[in-house]
Length: 99
Image (cartoon, helix red, strand yellow):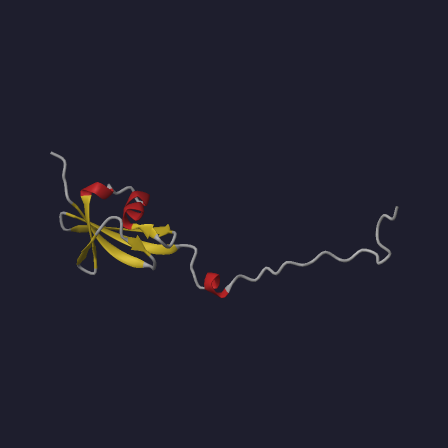
């Protein structure tokens, strides 16, 4: 019975480490600036999130209660489930107060 090969061993095949072109243009994290307004003052907070995250996730990342906030992008109200795909500045207006 014949075992092995008379041709010897071959070097291992090298796997390319190059990423596809579509992957090279997508940032891993994007910057979202949240301008939280209260009684005439503005508290600016920045958070790094993954592209495709929701506004709700960005608010939660800075400790702002999503359900108690109105969010505006360039003066236009935004749903909390809207996704963020690039760096953006959002205005956050708390919609409730303690009492």
